[in-house]
Image 1 (tube, rainbow, N blue to C red):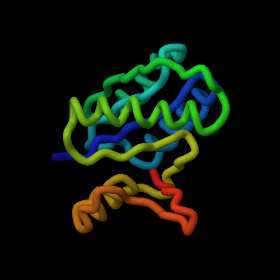
Image 2 (image 1 turned 180 degrees about the vertical axis):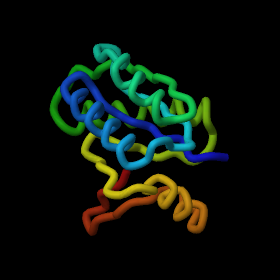
Image 3 (image 1 turned 90 degrees about the horizontal axis):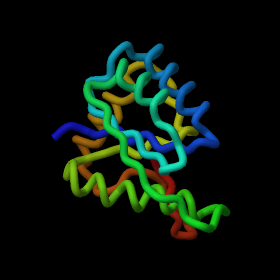
Image 4 (image 1 turned 60 degrees about the vertical axis):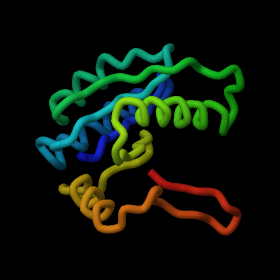
Length: 137
């Protein structure tokens, strides 16, 4: 099963996801993967979907309700948990969580990550700190 690319954003960083999608398109004219845009119900995903549709095979949108607490880590954890449950329901395969500060550095970035995942096949990829905090995309 192919890697699903999940792009997470909200109205406050929408400009960053748009810049990131433009940069991805500049690096790689087409990414042979499906994409899921994940945002809260107060965010309009139309511009991001338009840009993502020119880059990925298929683009869908997952929306979730905002949480009342706006301070870190509540909104971020809510976004990840709500989206993760939906991905498990609809995809049931490997996926990569890409936030707006996850910037690809070179052409072929996504293929390289997919190849690495297929070689290692670990449940999670990223860095586990001494404090037990998992950091990854």
